[in-house]
Image (cartoon, rainbow, N blue to C red; front, side):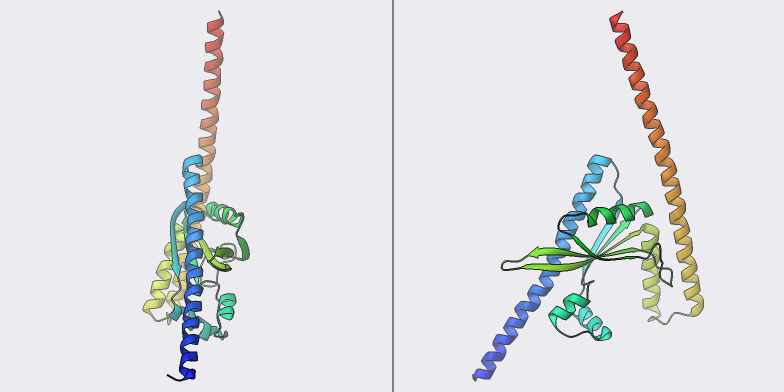
Length: 238
């Protein structure tokens, strides 16, 4: 075996190790974020007797998908360039019941001590032209490897059930038509997004009204208990 082949094999092995580390960092970042989200979910269940998180789904882009995006966007085919420019390699989607839950969860995640918010895109206040709505957060979290600390990006998308339902079906329709969707259908999809947004706003209003009624009932019960306790103490003293 000549020296050149030995060097090539060493370089190939080194590249494989770096690629493995690169993808593992994103997997560990997903694990880390899922743990944080599960803790928040459990805390809400036990302390607040309410869970704003309906569903959590995570995904890791495949190497093929990453390379396609790098080629499409014209980025350099180097790991540092890919890391800096492709910030959705690790992705988490959180589905909530109400719009207010989206911002509450976004705030709680952003306040985590070892989480840095790199970018926020609010497609709820400013929907995309096709009607898409969601809150996108690009987060940077530290991952501790055996010999280094890796600062890794994770994209978190937070949306309501209605937003998620619309986005899922819109994606399937575009996939079926290979992205060549007729103009009439594009308009109908946008109308459907508007209807989903109206439903979200109506359910948000009902949620707030019920919360006010529950709070009033709770305060009424507390006053009744206080009055009964006072009456009981008064009668015992007589």
